[in-house]
Length: 434
Image 1 (cartoon, rainbow, N blue to C red):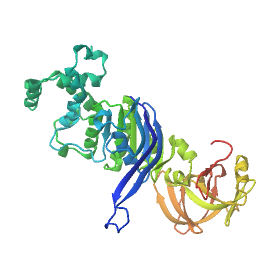
Image 2 (cartoon, rainbow, N blue to C red; image 1 turned 90 degrees about the horizontal axis):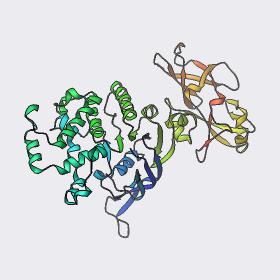
Image 3 (cartoon, one colour; image 1 turned 45 degrees about the vertical axis):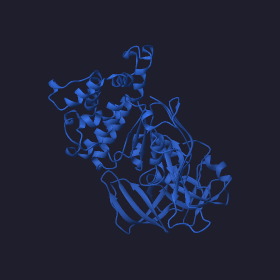
Image 4 (tube, rainbow, N blue to C red; image 1 turned 120 degrees about the vertical axis):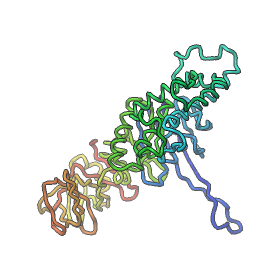
């Protein structure tokens, strides 16, 4: 396995202007899609890149894989700088959103396709002195053994293997490399529970089965790094949940460094060891799921992580511990004193999550709201309520019943609030960690 390190990475696309430029104008404009990307993915870690559509997360994955050229910066996989290496030499396997299965090949041949082409750079050893050959396949890793077997295969072995591939199993010819491939394919198929599908064509598979074949093709190559680009987006909700658990279990079982791209923050929170939140071509924060939830670095991260999203209200600071709004006033815990002193008399943004608002009674510190929408899910109830000109989301216990237009009073959990600078949108933190 290998660590992946991105150093000050930039990616700029050059786009031609339409219509043609006037005299003296440039014929092309530069569009920067990634800026100052610095990220370290540890050996064996499951890293999730999450962000809205267009934030650059899929482009970043393509840069790591070699499908796009970087504009500036460095990419390291293990101890190798791979900036100039073609994709096939980076020892990286990628799973695409569209599965990318060959429609005319069986599941077995789709799984074996990449393995049959692994011997390319080992073929040069055949022209070198004998003492440069691997001394013993048992001392080489599994990929080296397979690459050496493929590079050593003669033309007649290749031809005979191809000619007998569709014959009954007892009549097929298997070269040593083919035997290694067959063993690996069947082991991967058993792991993914698709061993009974090996003779089917992709059109005979369901969406979930196709996704497992795509995963199996990546796993079979035994790469140093997995890259997954929104692999579950084409599945229905139930199957997505099941496949999500399978991917996490497989990654833990194999221990392969994995970078997973998604726009679904629930997917990110439930899968990743760490999550890198991206927006507008930059990483906003990289942390564990709970740290992102409890201590978001800025307003964007706070609004993106959590479902339903965080509520925001404009307030004013009155040191040492009071924040005020035209319709309520709230005293914060003592650890906020030093932070609020710096913002005395200034407007800031208060953030509070739906689960940290609770039903209460009339009081100056509470919010008077009107129920606008009710979503009863059985295990919990979500309310959309109007507070002045703002619509707030509230999560309450399912035992209560509500009516549209009903008046409620909500209490804010003062030890769970977040404050953000109005100019930079950076989070303000109290003097103690949560």
